[in-house]
Image (cartoon, rainbow, N blue to C red; front, side, top):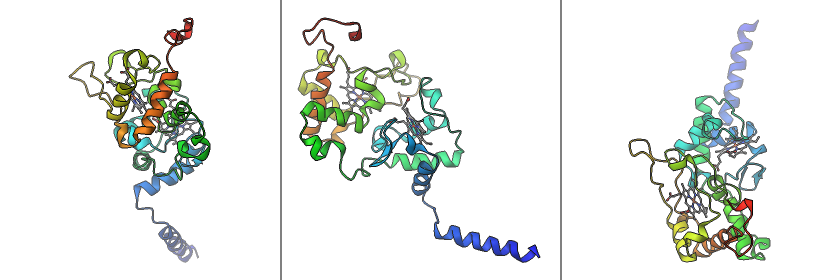
Length: 234
Ligand code: HEC
Ligand code: HEC
């Protein structure tokens, strides 16, 4: 009797999946991002939870090659990371990379620093929101402390931003953020550093960059601001 039931089931299943033909890797990646629980720790647009970095602009700041390496084994890049290794199948990983690489800020209904609440804040406070939302924090770490791994750079880490006021005037800092930078490789025979400072002028207005500059100036070590040096300054 199974002879007819099984083909009938197969037809029914085929009809079912035909209703949701996810032929687009980006759409499959979105489905998996939600289905695998990435949303428990990450936010894209106004969906998910901001426990880990906001990924709404991930595709602008990080290359597909880096995202792929990260998803393959987060601890291989950052032994201290709190992100679990999902042991993703290569196909699933490829779909997630397609979805995440497509995230260039378009998922925000309103950018977090352009809300009426943010408009009432000081420029430096708005700059801090930008710093975290667009993901400066994903390379330069919380409050610009640095210490996130990079390949083939002196010291093996992305630089801290807590002392930029010593090396840059406000206009110079603005220019640096606007134009981005590729770090000088430690060894010219090795692959280029995968984490590069993006050209933020392509995403942020001059006024928004100025707000970030004001925020970075609040990160100056206390000694430089005229206070007593403390152990946190070094
Ligand atoms: C338990 C919380 C948690 C879960 C679940 C989680 N992540 Fe993460 N993820 C993090 C944290 C924390 C970081 C910050 C980086 C670090 O710790 O080094 C991160 C970093 C990332 C980054 C790099 C972010 C950046 O801005 O450079 C990507 C990409 C990422 N996660 C994707 C995913 C995907 C895709 C999933 C689901 C398969 C996922 N994460 C699930 C916690 C999580
Ligand atoms: C993908 C990683 C990445 C992201 C995201 C990123 N940066 Fe950078 N940034 C770097 C790297 C790498 C350098 C070092 C470039 C070099 O060596 O010339 C750098 C350099 C800098 C410098 C110069 C520091 C110095 O001491 O010379 C400033 C300022 C800076 N970044 C600010 C920012 C701000 C503000 C944002 C967000 C709007 C941001 N960065 C986002 C990777 C990143």
